[in-house]
Image (cartoon, rainbow, N blue to C red; front, top):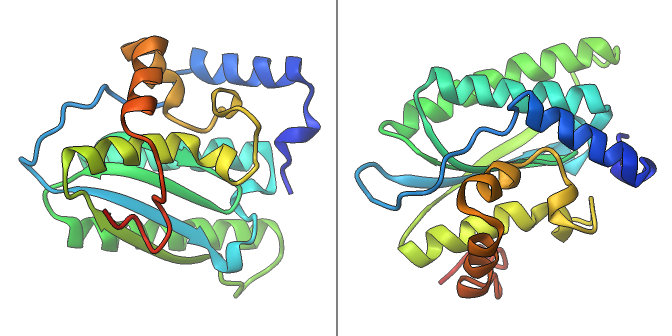
Length: 199
């Protein structure tokens, strides 16, 4: 399993710097509106196995594949985070039913490729993709914070700024660190995610 903690702080900084240089994060500052429905998507690996985190290369490749998928489908992405065994995205789209089917196809192609690499034909990789409709402006901003904080929540890293597979870095670059800290204070997580995100 890929383990971020095995890298030295200097190696972590180099990886993050390289990803920022190559513009891997794909995010734009949020402009909240309900012109099209907003969704928080959570896709997990089967029994939360770290199939995505098999290696640094796989985490990087899968992050890029998600980027390309949403770009092709012309989906607005507000926040995202990829972890070793699941990922989160906050998106706006016109036809969620169609998007969900296409995302399932991406999962299928990805699972087929990974199972071939590991000689594990027939293994189930992705368990499901659940969605939560965003119900208010507060829900929107708390979801942003939850997604960016997720690597810390799952103990993948001790500081959310150190995890490279997240939109947080461009979020900070575009809004400024002080503004991001204020959003964190104004929209605390509280019990978000327990039961699930009931407000």
